[in-house]
Structure formats: structure tokens, C-alpha cells
Amino acid sequence: MILTKRNFKNHIITILITCLLLLLKITPASASSDFSINSSLNIYLKNSSDSIVTVEEILEIETSNPNYYIPKGSEQIVPIKKDGLVTDTLSVTNKYGHEKGYTLEEEGGNLVITLTNRNNIAKDSPFFAKIQYQTEEFINQSGNIANLYLPGLHEDVRFEHTDESQGLKTKYRYFLTYHVPLDAPPKSYITPSSIQEEISRDYRTYTFLQKDRIKNTGWIQLGEEQFYYFKVAQTIPKTDFLTPKALSKYTNWLSTNILELAIPREFTENNQNVFIKNISPQPKRIRTDQEGNIVGIFEIDANKDKEVVIEGYIKLSKSIKEIPDFTISQYKERIQELSELETYTQSDRYWESDEREIIDIANELLSQSDDSSILDLIRNNYNFVIDRLEYSIQKAEGDNVRVGALKALQGAESVCMEYADLMVAILRAQGIPSRAAFGYGNDPLITDTDEKIGHQWLQIWIPDYGWLSVDPTWGETGREYIGGDLDHILWYTVGDSKQKVTDFAIYTADTVDAGIFGLYNVNIEALHESNVPDFSQLQTISDISMQYATQTDEEMKEIEYILKTTMLGRALIFIVPIAVVLLTITTISILTSKFLRLRNR
Image 1: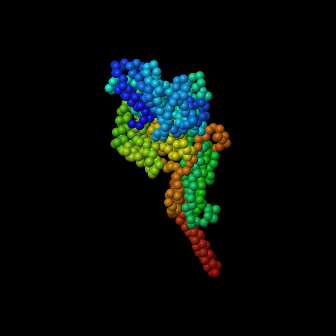
Image 2 (image 1 turned 120 degrees about the horizontal axis):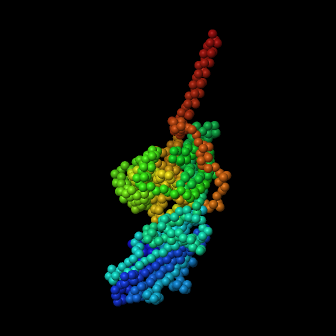
Image 3 (image 1 turned 135 degrees about the vertical axis):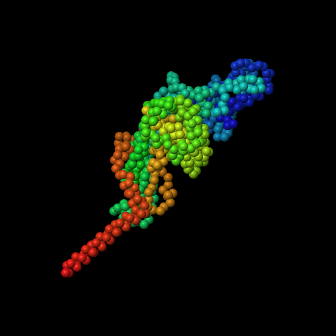
């Protein structure tokens, strides 16, 4: 068993009580508990902009049975996470505020506080210790929002224990309250919903009940707006070493590569708005597909090194729109009215919803939900995926190849792609429209770098709401992510593998190793509102999309791509003008010859 901060105490105290029984005369136990062990954890955020919190943890041990006591010299052990701890702030005091002796050792990345009882712990002399320190562990300031984390309890934690040999009962109680200043920004997201919010004289408090903390981490997000700066900088190396650069001054038909770059889009659920600061060079055109995805198309000289840059800002804000709930039968009736959703219920390359293994699981989860609410069914699917899959750090850091829902279900190593794909496949097998979402997750629990890695989650169609975002990968941290928040930045969505949208694509007539183009290179940084420009001075992505939109049909676009980015097209570009010149010269020569013969007559 892995001993966490809480069940470690259970384990130690159980040992102490067991040893105690060997020393004392046994008498019948009372109906109530003989021992009670209370852990009260209070976390104080003094200022809403602080990056550290003050932690006050009180450990109390009481005996209600006068026939038993815990002898002096026994030890109580409390581990504290070392990372983020401000070491010189650590103190341990008794109930009168006097310093209490302790030893401090490092063990497995934690600091272990050992408290030795100087007196017997009996009915009239309970044990009390207050441990105080400052730490970065339970808060993260990210741009314009503060993320507050309320630690959960290990699944092995029990609230009551009875000694099998003597029948002595011990009760454990775990209290947790997070104290936030009254002038702090309002919350924009809270999970689980059972966290209780109250207003006191000095603080707004959030209480996380012990029954809800088992295998569950609380998360409160303060702030209703978030801002990000982003920069896509794609370097395209020279691929054409034959065509002279001088020719490119006169025409781009002789040596051209075509680059397609995904640009962050707008999205209604979290009011995602995109403002463009710079696009260089100017795109040939910007394409918006039926999903609302935006792709910039750039024509660049193949006989030169070139960098394409897109930079701007993204604003997210809390939606006031409630997620409507329906019974499953009501939901099915509503979506049948919309024929355009049929695509999102079909089996596809990574969402094998017609495979027997996936159908059986989908039906089982559906039957467990009976005709309860559609949100309950979504939660059941969500929890199944989290419990079934195990996140693979090795895959995330190695050859990260997307394998699809079926292989993930069968035990393949899984990362965010597989979590999302499996849930999409299950939903589609249940007849629920869903699609994959790609972008970037600003999750401070996973990474503390501004260079965000790509992330995949999913979206589910809900009548009277639209696309509902769901992220089962983040569920591994103990949080429930169903609904929009301010930490997911949407780049594009995919409902059909035939969609021609990806991070970036390069079309070239030259024979080169694809590895020279590297990966999609994007940097994202969360910003405080004081560091963002006046957005009224910038163009929105919608305005720019309209400015560069064209009516070129697909057939004409394909012909243009063939002419500019294939060897056949390049050959035709060279051959046709030469042939025209030769034909013209030949025609002129023939006509001149005929004219001279006629004149000589």
C-alpha cells in the first residue's frame, strides 16, 4: 500500500493501538468509538495574487474510553510535500501556541515530521499539534486566473477501524477548508460540485467534505476571464536547389511550396475570441471549413529558406450558459431532428464504434444508466474511460503514435488521444453525436512551462447548448472536467477522418525528407489582463478570414496545387512556355517563308 499524507496516519495510529492492547488490561469496549483521530487542514490565501498559501494542519488524538491510553514515547508521523515548501516557515506548536519538539527527515521526496508524545494520551490528556508552513503546492497563478487545489484522500483511507482481536473502535475525521479573501475574483469553475461555499467575516470559505475527497481532488478556479499570447513560427527550409532565386522575382510558378497552417478559431462555449497581431508573410488565402476550423494557406519560394509567423492573443471568458439536462429518451428524440449530426454518430478510423467489443461496453454503460439523465450517462462513460485506461508517460515522451479506440481498449499504451478516442467511440456506439477537439491544455498540475504541448479532448452535442467539452485525460488527476473552463484553448475540431485539417501540411515538388520540416511550432503564454494590448486595435480572426477568403472551388485548387507542387506541374510550367515559344517561332517562320515565296512570284 502507498501511504499518503492521510492514510499514513491511519496506519501509524492503528499500529500504536494494537501495541497498546498488549500492555493494558482489556475491558469491554463502549458502543461509541474508543479513540478518535482528527486531522483539520486549513489553507489560507492571504491575497488573491499570491503564489503561496499558508497551511495550518491540526492533529488531535482523543480517547473516550477511560480504560485505555496511548503511552508516552509513542510517535505520530506527518509527511509534507517538499516541492514548493518554504522551509523556514515550518513550525509545530501545542494548543497554547508554545513550540512543540519534532524531528524532520526527508523520505521519498517528502519531508517527514515525527512527533513524540511526552505524556500518555488519555481521556483527560488528549494529543494536540498544530503544524504551520507556507507552500506553493495548493495554488497556481496562471495569467489572469488563480487555480486552487484541494487535496483528496487515498482510496485506502477509512473513517472507522475496529480492532479485530479486542473490538476497540477508532474513528478518523478529515476536515479541509480553503480560505479565500473576500475581494478575490469570483469563481469561474469548481469541481466537485459538492464543495461547500460560505462567507465569513474575513474570508470566503470552501469546505471539502471527507466523504467526497476519496480518490478526488478539488479544483477551484478564481477569475472569469483568461488571456493568452500565442506565436506560431514555422521554419520552411529551402527544398529547390536548381531554380535560380532571380527567377522568383518575376513569377512564383517556377519554384513554389504551399504551406497550410492551422490558426486558432473562435468557440462559443468558453467565449473564445482570437485577435491577430501579425501574419508574415501575408497568406494567399484563408480557408474556413464547415466545422469552423481556420487554415492559413501560404505560397513560399521553394528556393529560399523562409519562416512563416502568426501571432496574436486569445481571450476566454466564463459562459453563463447552463448545461441543460434531458432524460436519455428525450435527448435521442431531440437529436433525431437534426440530420446534420449523423456524421458524428458513425464509425470512423479512430472511433471504431461498430466493433463488437465497443458496442458491448457502450450497451452495458447505457443499461446501467437506464433512462436517467444524459449527463449521468456522459459521466458513466467518462469514469469508465478513466478507470479502464492508464496514462503512459513513456508513450507521451516517446514515439507517440495515435492507435485509436479499439487498440486502447485492448490494452495499448494510451495518452490523451486514446482517452478521447475511446470515449468518442463509446458515445457514437450509443448514438450520441461527438467529435475530437485539438488544441492546448494549460494545466498547471501537469506542466509549469509556457511551451505547451498539443492536447486532445472531445466534444458532445447537447441540444439548446451546442458542443460540450469533455476531457477524460484530466480526470486522471482526480478532477471532473465536463463543461467549458478557461484552461483549454481550442485550435480545431474533427468529426470525420476525411476532413483535411491538421496542425500544418507542406506541399512540395521537390524530393526531400519530411523530417526537415520539423513539428508544428507554437508557443503559448498565459497573461494577466494588465499585460494585454487594446484588442480594439487588432483584427479578429473572423475579420481576417473574410479578408482572405476566396471562392476558389476544390477542383481549381487541386489544379493549382498540382501545377505548383508536383514534378509534373513544374515540368508543365517549364515545357508549356517553351513549347508555345517554339510553336510561335515555327509559325512565324512558316508564315514568313510563304510570304517570301509569294513576293518572289
